[in-house]
Image (cartoon, rainbow, N blue to C red; front, side, top):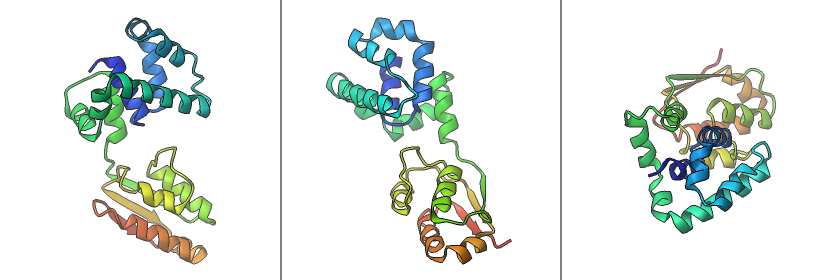
Length: 191
């Protein structure tokens, strides 16, 4: 698969962030200008990557282009394809970014004593476990994506008893969601 097609596939599949896509695109802009149709190239160049709607519009545009012109490549760019890149001896920017993104951490520790609202609980869980930016701000959204993130080997929720006292219903919901992941040791620490 060519670099420009691989980059676009990984971007539209949310395996690379918009910032990563933009950086790699700009680093190889001459190649992209030569390889891409002018309408595709101009759409990327004219995108304001700091505006969410522009990024969404670009992703939709590129997805349609890839499905139309490169259906095998877009379908081939899946989890096993990413695993092959990560496990390969490739040393390019894409491979390094994917390795860093999908690297499993040994330990994540979350300090819970300052959590006072359900909104704060959701935000802390999403941030510390690196849920994707498109994850909604609800327990249902966390539940829907619980298998889509890379969990650490061990997760410690320090001072969890304070959350249980302040938010008994919500703490039980999060506890049940987190326990779905059997590939991680989860410790609800009381001090």
